[in-house]
Image (spheres, each protein chain N blue to C red):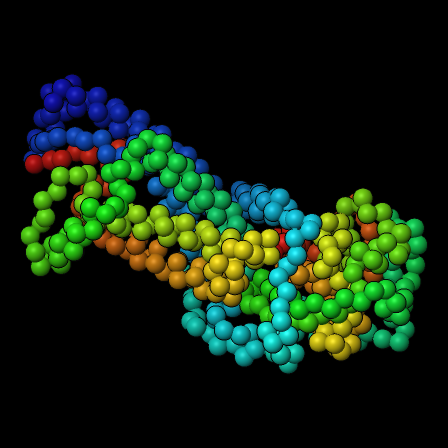
Length: 227
Length: 236
């Protein structure tokens, strides 16, 4: 059985050099549930935004942008709110479980952006823009990755806090006040969305650049390094 | 290399462990979508009820922060002016109350008057700060001898709109039977002669042109927009 597998591998011209367990189960589960809920929240959020695509006064109303209905989820305002208020719970739950797991398992140490990583960010950016050599790496995540993933968690937290302030500006009036009031909370919620979209874009570019084995490791946990 | 076949088995198992993610795909099935979204919205309404605090007041604002009256939007679902006969108008009270019957505006206005500058938030996303005057709904409920252990206050409107709120919200000190905006009697498009003003609730629950009010434990219908799929407990 072992020989057959090896032979099959060789016909494809690949030899497995090493395998590495990269992503624990809870991380993978939370990642994919969160990814799905983020997609639904963004789509339904933009449908909600279509009802009043402005951050100014209602009278006179100056629209910021006309988001196409085809790129939104929910069909109408009430439908979009149903999607949004449903998937917000999945988003929140997976976010909390992920952060809790990282803290509890100590896994956070390899991905949390800390002071010693600061100096390593710029060389990594230079490398990605073909302006410098690939910096030596002796940790699982490079400084730029750590920064990106840490910022992503902060953005996730911001999206929840700004969303809560919009949903409950009276009961959570202190939160709305911290954000500058209901009116501003709505703008911060929108800005946070686009910051997350920017992260996801960069994330997907990196996924494509780093290939299939890297992608599979977020599904199975294991990364096969081939020669 | 001898660990490879084992690893393939692990990979399959690890992939299978992610099937809960596919469960989210149930939302793509038309038959399941509606009940699932209803459950999600119900969970949000449940959380809203937990977050509501009886004594917590909505923020109030200085006169200088008011949205000018001319820029206070008129929202309706049908007509701006349902043509209420203001002279003949009375509020029909029924349900779990000791003194059911017709109440004239003067009887409501005889109760203590409160004025408040509060924010009105529309489900569409815009918000305005308005000045509202009227009597506390709680005072009116006591006047009519309402059973305040009942669950809901339900209202109907001259434009066939209808709405309901839970008793805790009805008894909130800022919940008004509103007959003035910006220190003037309600104009027709803003709900003359009487409307609800609930600063702890979303705009679509600020029913205008009230004609009927009942205190009840059972709702035949919840509210015009709620019955189309909007949140039933849209507390702010």
